[in-house]
Image (tube, rainbow, N blue to C red; front, side, top):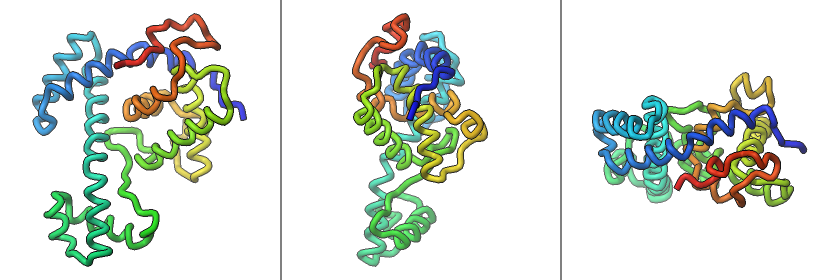
Length: 232
């Protein structure tokens, strides 16, 4: 199966040119502010956007998505443990929710899900402030598929541009295989749009970086090395 996607390459390259600056600025914002204080977030974003000559709305979007992911992985084990306590130990939902500091209505809904599929239950939700296609657990499976595909097919180049190009088509194939509804653009072009690809990279930059094995592109040697380097 040919998963190259030449039409996406220019868009991917443009995205990666600014990625490292946005990532650095977003990390500085997260290190600086108390995420509970909205005014602090917005002021910190404006300060860092000015410092790095970035668009503040785009930086705020990145910060919000990174914050949502952190919050999800923070509460995920709490809900999974709480669901286990209610189902297997018979503890009351309201008291259990108070004990773990989570929402009792959401816990009630998760308990229903847990009773329906005890063996495979995981706390899962779709990323907030994002283009909603996959849930967090589905995105983890997509990352596994991407890594397996690279290992099995040994593509000619696995620089960041080529991996993103591969991901844009593999994500569409994944959605089709799992019967997941996706945007019309995906169905028309048989690959993702650049906006979703950018958001996926924001949520999973460290996991994706572990899949890159070179700092130059074998298919397009003229790509600047600085575009392909780690943002860290």
